[in-house]
Image (spheres, rainbow, N blue to C red):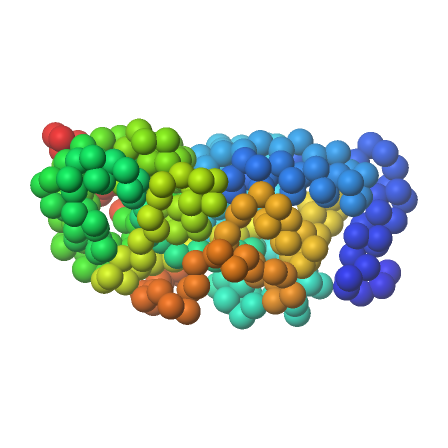
Length: 339
């Protein structure tokens, strides 16, 4: 077979045709719904392989893959923050695979793979931050927040949403970011103080900024690209890169260990790393930075080079023990506090 290059789609069509029409792929997707749908449908068009796609947040998907360990039902897990993908790799829930597409990828994508024994790989990156609704901010006579610690001011009580870190990779990244920026004691104190101002912990990581766009909350803590999407949709949102610095994600993809459709899973994996597949993000207003060096990054995407990013320790905070420990501590010391 020819080396996988720009003729990738044609090669996949030939593979699909040679294997018959009964091929199928079960895809677990942890990106935004529209992006999940276009990835599934475009892969079907490119290969003739039927895709059964389920969209859940990354924390929920990790829990599902873990629960199905003895009898895997999914083939590929695409999207969502890297930390739960790394935990899945550590716990032996995902399959080692070295794609022939790797030479086309940014170094940070390959580093993600190497840190996990090639059981996952980076597909996009994005910085953590928040957005606020300009109209609600003015109506409530609130000061414009520019830093993480601004969100602790008492006047923001009841005005902030974030996701639950048990279900959301975005929120776990927030928790791990505070611990890394401020130290564990001060980081957890930050989360406790922030808790006093939270009006709701959502299941999905992008839900808080969608609520802010609709005027249901003033501030939503999210990855900045999700806030940009609300701006582009016409909602009165201002996007903030916090002054102290911030963490970031490497959105990842993994093949589930024991996948029933392993050949199809590898075909999807290779296709999803191509520039053509990653350019589909532009069609659904997904403003992450893609991992293929030949893929296009929207000019509206947050410029990571201009944002003060911390040296996020993906290996440590994506480890099973550390992730479980921090989530348990958050459950016991933060979520139980009165609001």
